[in-house]
Amino acid sequence: MKKVITYGTFDLLHWGHINLLKRAKSLGDHLTVAISSDEFNKLKNKEAYHSYENRKMILESIRFVDKVIPENTWEQKVEDIIEHHIDIFVMGDDWEGKFNYLNEYCEVIYLPRTVGISTSQIKQDLFKVK
Image (cartoon, rainbow, N blue to C red; front, side, top):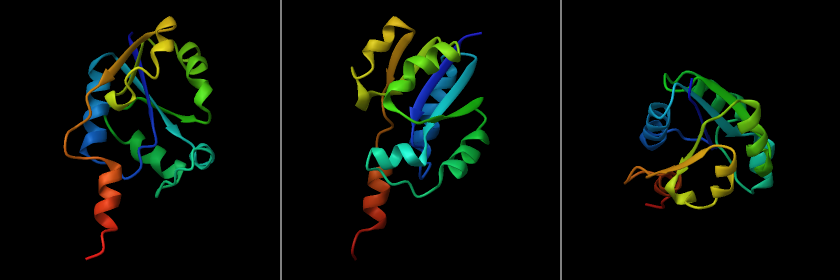
């Protein structure tokens, strides 16, 4: 069985997220999604609208996702790859090159982002003063 992993906050879920998950799952037989814990988001100075538990529940309901685990640190990726027997690490191409060091442990693939949608854009649009 070929196992794939991806990481993210997955807050304000949109079709770009779904496209990423669908394409990541198509690369293997099992998709693990590591989502940033609330504590990790605070360390990154990032605020999620939904709590970790709610984001986890949402992701677990998506047919492309087989397993959801917490991301608590930047450094845990190697440990996750080994512990979960991961064959392919997938991220959006906005992270191109940042995780090449993981090629020592598994294949690293950067997928193109979905054009026309991003969580940042949604937040900007929602908070525009009219």
